[in-house]
Length: 111
Length: 111
Image (tube, rainbow over all chains, first blue to last red; front, side):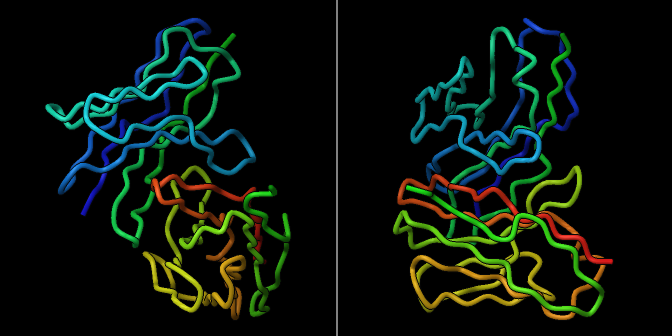
């Protein structure tokens, strides 16, 4: 089945620093890929997604490119803000029996 | 649209008590999921449903039961609550593009 491997956290950055959170996937076929974000005390919400190779998803200054050659979907942001502090989850589409989300990557941005 | 709603938001149970966590969606999605999230951990799939009348076990189903009599509702039943079931419970739906939509969660403490 499909699965993702996500960079372990936690990650601590200063405001305006560059962010990369690595995510690689294994799949039979071509899954859709997602990044979800969970702010403190809330449920997960979709941050961005890509449905085919070379697609770039973007939202709120975050970007991720679906790279088939490296089976990766790394999350990037050029200049993080304190308000970006959250837990980030990489996820792929798969069978009806959805895989777990894993522990995510905790990002803390310091002023 | 309300999306995915969950009740209650918080609950404290004594060991051995039972309760039902409610989940309702108004997006007409066939796929629905129940996850639990322990502190600092990722989400683990408890049960899922691919449509009314059809449910199946996820990764951690022991101690829980579900039913799906309508497209809108997917309640999760805890029988004989145990301290190990202290967690945050999230209900989610999935659309045809595999994007998942999460409820705000139910914070359950079993003492």
